[in-house]
Image 1 (cartoon, helix red, strand yellow):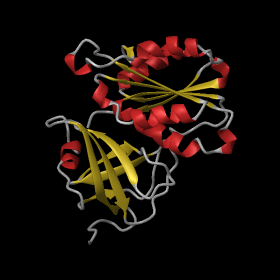
Image 2: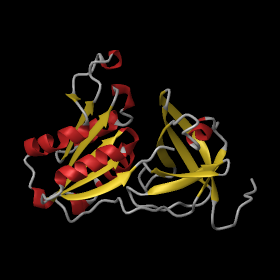
Image 3: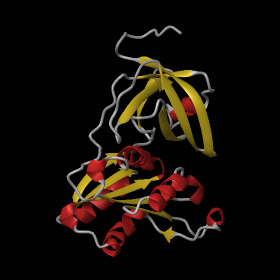
Image 4: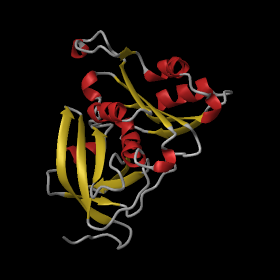
Length: 245
């Protein structure tokens, strides 16, 4: 395979696996042609058809392949995701050789509250896969709060529930924002948008604000609302916004 781009600026990453969750949500696994180093929480920049976008990585740095959680944004608003949606296993995308982003674990805090919407859960999956085995964080607590419109949009709920059952310091809760719709008929968890629940949930968890960092990843509106709610408090806040393709 010949890469017709500036050497060192791009490399190939082959699509090795794809898992469809809903009509517009899927997981994809990429095998870069060279070693790709990153910190949990960072993003990679991939492209095809001359279009590039950044995607948070769900896999741990200890894994051989890059795992992404992608939401389709149809044209005319969507540019790259329709092209990614058409990719077949065995085909390739370009990938920038260096991961970027400062949305990474801050180990100085005792409590880590991780708030995400749909694909915004990806960096937390990467963090937990890596850091739950880190002895330096054995005294830390992890509170994951995920929101979606529908229950079938929780792409990592089984894994996160297992993290919570296997680790006394991990709690996972999820909420649907449209509980009255037929698609959510079997839902029996929290209800409402996560930005409207986070203050109440943190109060119920009984965490000390000065020992707590709140991470927010996903929809910009959700992030902005949480940021405003925590302004003037002792909570530390860190954000990673996902914009529509």
